[in-house]
Length: 294
Image 1: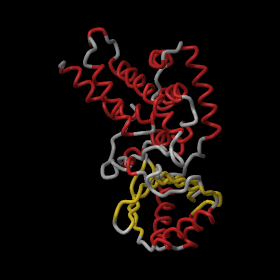
Image 2: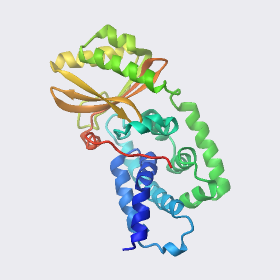
Image 3: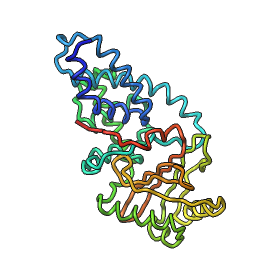
């Protein structure tokens, strides 16, 4: 095994994971892609590689694309709404506005509406500023075609992406108010902190009970949430954390982890709640994940 190859891969591992995760929306699949990338990387003659970072991103993207085309078919048969696998991120991610926006659950849901190639092109260009020639090599298209794909994908995403979220301080205040109201089952407190058209999306994956469709409107969301808690007769506690670069919550029911909630704040109120209960997507709930954009 070439020590130089190992050193380069280890040094770029967080970047490669971030690329794969943004293309796939799944940390588990991203880890598998890194394994496949490593197996191909150790067979490369480094003397023939001009830019090792670009070459590794190219391998990672190709493997992520192959996997995305496979998992997309599975997601079409998913029970209920499919949400990206949430990541507990380090505080420095929240301080990098562009990285946090690219990682947000709301934006990643929009990326699900793109074709696999469109998604890969958008991620490489918008999140990692990869030049068109390198993207073309990664996705097997001409640079001219990649420019057209990037333009089409950007237009599609811009029309659907959530509005730019509030400042970190404003978002933290809104999430803290939501946390207090949820734990005390304060109906008016929840109504005050939710935007009128707030949306709750749950992902139980057919394993855990969750709404099969999004619930829209602050009053409907509050009645659904508090009604469920009171009917079950349970105690709900929460822990503030960073989810995909934004304030979020670890939710426990009677002391046991129930799910991870990512929250999107607009104009000092919570407009989007993305609640992941599927156990397969909670395996990283106890550890922060290092993600980088450069």
